[in-house]
Amino acid sequence: MTFTYIFGPVTSSRLGRSLGLDLLGRRVCSMDCLYCEVGITDELTARRDVYVSAATMLGELEQWRAENEILPDCVTLGGAGEPTLNSDMGEIIRGCRRIMPEVPVAVLTNSTLLGDPAVCEELALADIVLPSLDSLVEEEFTKLNRPCGGLSAAGIAESLVRFKAMFHGKIFLEILLAQGINDSEANLALLREFVARLSPDRVDVTTLSRPGAYPLAKAVSAEVRRQWCSELGSACNRLPGTPETSDAVFLRTGQRADLVERDQKAATDMIERSLRRRPQTPGQLALSLSLPLDKVESALASLERRGMIHTVENAPAAEDGTHGPFYSCQ
Image (cartoon, rainbow, N blue to C red; front, top):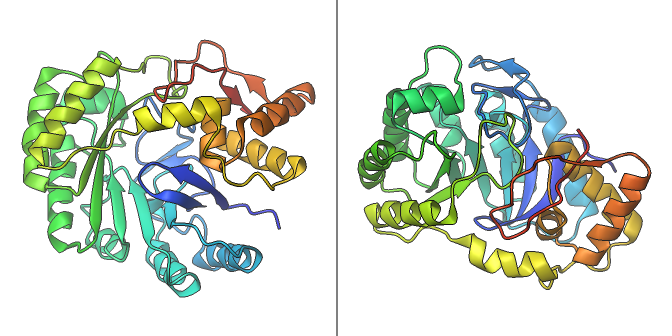
């Protein structure tokens, strides 16, 4: 069966083999971030609605479970926009537990709706929440994240602290740095204090590894990222994740790809669906889809000959050690 709202499993440095659930189905978000890898936000809103119904989503999940013997390490609610905008989120999380009770549920969020008690109650049903907060300098927050009206960095930070107090699962905080926008010493100082206060289970400092929605967003250097990882990891007395070292080796060699039995047509179909979501390098596709690099490269060549994908011009060097080319269906 071809799935509309389920994708993967993909390999995640934080979550293992993660089965993705797209709760929006299109680019609906409360922010229009410069760096967004799925592209420019089509609908900028903080209004909750049933963008993809629980019945539809869980119907696909039941079908996926029936077709797959091997369970993922995690089911991750995310997709093309902000998943907490889906007012059926709570029912979807409960359904995930019913269909795959052995598998933890994670939610990716930009943290903007945590001021809503209903959102917090639903989000607290998850096992892992991965919130983002890129800057506590309001000017930087506005420039980088381009939020809809009424949102502030300070307000989001306070809502995240309140949510942490009621949540019994794990919190993996993510901060994405864009060169010359939010990599300031002022932001680092404020986030250092905030991380110490929030005390998340993990801090991940990332930068652009794929082309962003707007060319203004550019990756910071590895040295800057290492500094932020060190200082913010120390602030919460936990070591931040540093996946770039181990992943770079895999991405160049494909040694960890474990699903070599997939035939070429299945691999090609998987790659095309993945590229419809975001631009990626051959190495990134090999890692996320657990495919040998030579199988990925063969599929990409076939898709390019058929005019179904194209290379992305002026793409950044990927932070995971691959240097392109990036391919996209968009």
